[in-house]
Image (cartoon, rainbow, N blue to C red; front, side, top):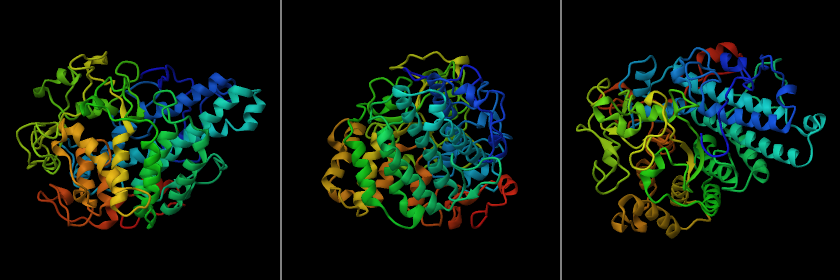
Length: 529
């Protein structure tokens, strides 16, 4: 963790140990011995409560990396980013995993079952984070503050904390919206512990997220005006832009004009591209970096777990690659690598032209899923400061690289794609300037610059692959383009066939976990499962 906002819980005192994370239930009370009246007795207690909300993104439990707040899931798998990344990348043309853990092969084949432990873990992790946000919001109403004699500037600060809690909850509801479509739904206003949560339909959940993000805008810090790692107006606008870009998938109604509006807000807010693309993915990416809008912060000594960027780095390399050069001298797990579709997006595979393509290995093709050297390795993420310094790392394995949930480059590409799709209020020449700014950084000069005619809708899918690969966007992008399911676009082992085969359209969203369907009679399984 870096700078002034430490997203670390040194003890479990403030961790609200919720049955919800064990039972995948949004509607239960905290069961720990520390009461809310104790936790939230002072303004400092509210700040610690806010820390807890952010900590849920970077830790698997309050008691160390060997424990999990998600019942029935190995602690090594229980980190939010690891689960989210797995759901967004392993099922696509960008990544494949050599491991045989239960549930991974069916993700490699884009055919997960209703009992897939990684999807159940993502669903449970998102619900846990929503539940903790709901509890914070219940305890920070004006009435609660008045009863605790918290007024003036302290109350104003907590109003901002509330807006951040609502943002974090909206983000997790977006994760559920995008992945599962029709999840259970509870807010701080529901009477918890009495009835099972109702199911919300996808279009209604879209409307709720949209309304929440708009409602909190005025209470959030100005863009780039909050502590590092905390949400502000820039993050709010970035999520709205992403939401609107995918609105047709979520609701049946396109909102490309709105995607242009909100990506433009981000772009105008003072962010700028990092001059060297690869510096975005090093352990000092919190320094002099005005491209990242909101990050999940990691610390390789005091906030460790086997997910996050520790997973991204270690799972993509093995000992033969010289693990110290990636900042994890005792790491290297040999699991994830590319399918040939990803390196094919680049003019070459060794970075002499488009330097965003950072691959290792001699074999592009994947003939055997379980052979790590089948397919090129991705060397994008490194636990390195500068060119070679390894920051402190517990056991030489854990990473201090922070992960960008939102960065400016994505907003450039949202703007351009929305213009190409016919959204109003944008400009094709402006879109071209944004694309060429990304490509000039990638090539080191103007040799990769494009003309307006090149900026077709399909171009943006490929350019997002080049700019954002392995950052957790690909499944959402392929669904938006109608290429995730069906047989018009194939990749190795799609559908469980080496050459790739068609998969049915119902797989554009994931199944609700079977365990939650049993526990909650209000839930109806998504069509096809």
